[in-house]
Length: 108
Length: 392
Ligand SMILES: [Zn+2]
Image (tube, rainbow over all chains, first blue to last red; front, side):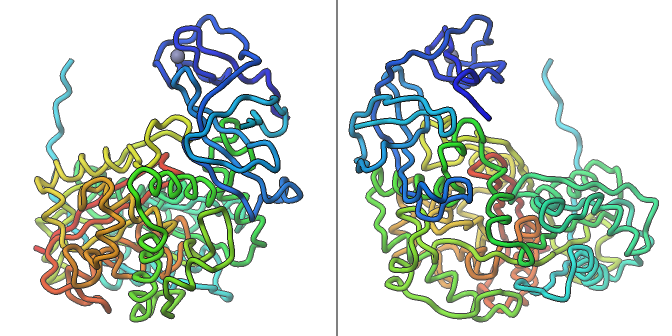
């Protein structure tokens, strides 16, 4: 099971990246020192989709909305939108919580 | 140190073969490969023992057909055991990769006669098994764990393309309408039935805004090609087709690593390499088979390949510019949407159609076609190959 501990923050550019990234995909700096990701993240929705036909593992969640978010530090992260909320292109979102199962969950 | 370019020999395709695409109940992954290769060998007039190497493109054969070491297995069934055989994998671009590797081995002078083949057996597996196998091309940690699906990735691309360029739902649906129309005449195609915009946009919702008719079917099939140096090609056939440019690139695995998801950097890079090698521009291409794994993917492809300016793919499709009699005919075979998408076979099936076009033997013949292009994409942009073909 993937957990929050797989994620970290590039100290050079503050992008949210993975522990397995040897080089930051955003700023191309080699990673030596990193910080845990901050609890507060805000950004805007740049793309979204509502999944109707879900993978077996997530079938009971469907329909659910996945959003591509441009964080305020100009990096991207993919997450779900809090159940019941409607996505709008360009609308502001913030991290609601970090789910070990689904990754970041955003809220408008 | 500045890298010097190796001297490349001119490369010809002297034979192509393909199974029908569809639900091939009586065929296995191995028997389909054999059948496409036998077709290509007989088309080339080459004695099979002359074949010096095999490159086989396959993506999910281990998971869905429970067959490993497919390339030596194929060589065994063809009676050419002993030669080097290699399976290559680049998700849905595996076939394009096999062709590219075969091209390189002939161009670089390693071999004279090389067999490239692509295959996939998908219809015997339950849909869940197929979609989870295909989903392995996504970035598990960065995006797939959110519950994103493969259609979901392209739905985001479609939504972003519509928001950025004003591309309309109807324009995107037109890709499906056009390709289904083209599929009617192609006796290798899985779907040979017309559709219309209304039917596409009201079909079952998969991942909004993508509907069922924006997606390709689950398909079985195999396709193959025989390559040799151009200077000896006429000893075998009267109408060899030259492979004049080949490009291959990798791109981001996750949409999060791209600042503009309405374009695939791997497609742009592979196309630039191929155009440069061929010394041609996008405007020189008469006919193209592009990777329409979803309707929106064709619109992105015709922009990335330089056929139309960024953002004009939708209007160009609506105006018929990509039709058989348009500015550039795109997916005359019916594309992945109508012909079917046996993922590992697709890249070679595209080459099969382009070769028919340049021989003037296609069931949807484009008048006066002399230069053709095949564009194969893997994942949501992780791999791309572009190959350019010319009538000699
Ligand atoms: Zn960084």
